[in-house]
Length: 182
Image 1 (cartoon, helix red, strand yellow):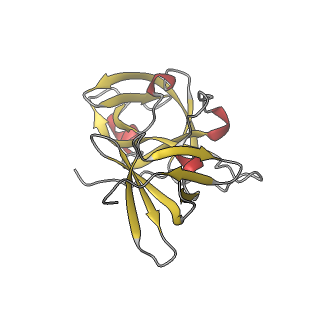
Image 2: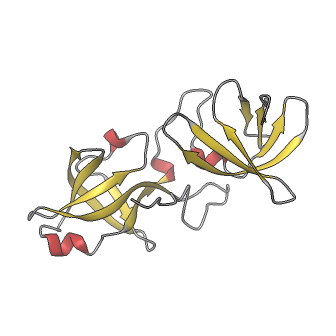
């Protein structure tokens, strides 16, 4: 299956610079004859996607309510209010599903949403600025941070405790330790 670039955030942005919407899933294809559709899950909180949850679909952020969800392999089967046939739900195929950023659950101290990290300056423990975090790639073992230097070169940093020392959101910095060979 080709890799889909997950939008870290979307919408027209708020006055605080926070995104208005966050991607939580990608709708693939209808499943069965009762209006269910297969959704790839792109959230750490899939348990929040339950009946009566209001989500927004597509680039126009069309509001719609979930009526049911259930596991389907590594994905989820979702049905929406008023869409009871494969043809009706099929109109939403290949579109992203979003929730309002304001509705996201709070995280524990020291945890961050990915959209909060994109764009932060990456600085080594020696004080050298490496560039800005432009992307977070999800691999099987651990995430990889893609840092773009001013000269356009990319640096790939494994998101592991030995490398990531801390995040300072007010200063818009990520502090890292470069392991030998990085």
